Length: 214
Image (cartoon, rainbow, N blue to C red):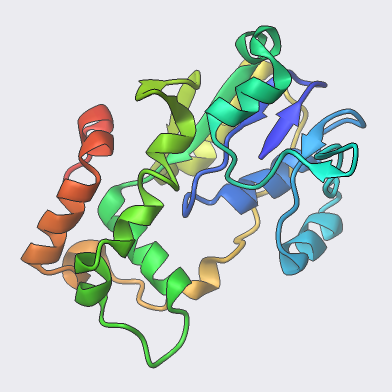
């Protein structure tokens, strides 16, 4: 999660939507007073190599108040409504069926893996939805950010934001964490009908809001 006072934007980080890669790129244009939350040690090495700033200003009086995957509601409470309303707020969302596949390999990176169908039907797949997505960029069920960008158009979305906010040039997005998904087939080739229907139920709010289809 990044709050840039320098450029007046807030990036809410959702799960499995290239959030870490986006954070790394955005951190290269941040200023001294901007709030940047920590990422993994491995990803911090990548960030440093690309000239990005590491974690800063997320700890207040010894307490880490700002953190990774922080909900909009909590961010607004800490920075205050005037700042929240005055900054451009954005995040990314992803086709839920594709998102679940990515989440599955993140949760089970090595063999022996829990069968995918069991992962989906257990309800654990839903954790990358509400708590890892919709609930982060909404407040009381209402959209709280200015734009929910599409993961599927990642480069174009960031270019658009950069142009609209007149941001400096940033490095190409690194492929942080992309190695975890070993099965690169399209989600339609991986998911059975029952699992696809379960995901449709879990992600009903996202599907209604953004028109995703299987």
